[in-house]
Length: 448
Figure 1 (spheres, rainbow, N blue to C red):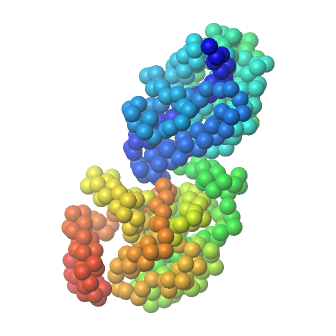
Figure 2 (cartoon, rainbow, N blue to C red; figure 1 turned 90 degrees about the vertical axis):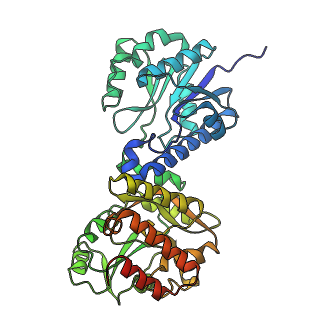
Figure 3 (spheres, rainbow, N blue to C red; figure 1 turned 90 degrees about the horizontal axis):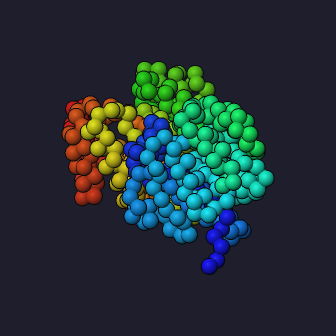
């Protein structure tokens, strides 16, 4: 009978169900976006860990929360053991995973999570190697916890207290408390290089940097963010502030003749402000003509983007076969009926590849010029532009969120607004002129 591998790598993850995973990231990414990020991070860690299988004799195991075994087997394939995590605190769940590994004959075992974009096969290999001469290996995180813990079968009984309720799980004292107990138990230990994890919205740029495949993140493609505005003084400041911190971008506000101080408010924040005739298509084309970026991103004046958005945009724009992209929609309201609208819009854009302008459309400047920009239409210019883009390639929907105001839904009623939108789309497909559609839209909205 062949000897079982002496080493085991155990990946802790959760089934990517919207609303039940990475919940602290939902304010930035939305339920679907947070779940999508969980899926991608898990797959990336498993891909990284898979590089060890050919280099050393090792068992790769996934311990999961949420979802059924059938769902996990449908999601993950390959040489991976699957087991549900034990119920209870994190320490208890890890303790059971180590017990099962050592009972099965393993001599060295390592547990890692999936929210560490910087993890590499070299780091994982080093962790297992250092367990040959040490009782404990830890990979510290920047927030005071650890992303990796490795233990040996020979000293496991002495190491059990490292996973007890004495550890203040979920706090910034986890690593410090663990090291203190290790010293009290006379466990020899080694620390790996510190890495950053992704727990909160402000951590998202860490993933964005790796998502493109560069430690520092891609800076080659400059993004020009074009914001058409007309009497948006109440919203323009927050929209511009949501873009601060993004790298290698320019912001261009195209004012269509505001009389409420929109242009002055934008200038005070240091962005470029252009004046043009009113009309969203006219304003966006004017901004594009002024832009210097390789990628053009058209953003509504009442829509805010989540941190790290620029990395997702560059990554999507650089994929083969992609002509353009848009963000995952989030409506800035707690109303359950708007959650339904939000979900319908995201399903439409993800499967029909038909996002609307409030999702922030981005496209390469070269393709924008090739298509001649937005058609000079009083309404439905975004819909018509996306239809032309679909003929050029795939429309990519990224997990980063565009959080848009709920005002257009609330102004005349949520369901009435939805019906108006459906009539507009149907009228467009039936060949009703944009002028007549615009007149209908104004009357339906009570604007005369």
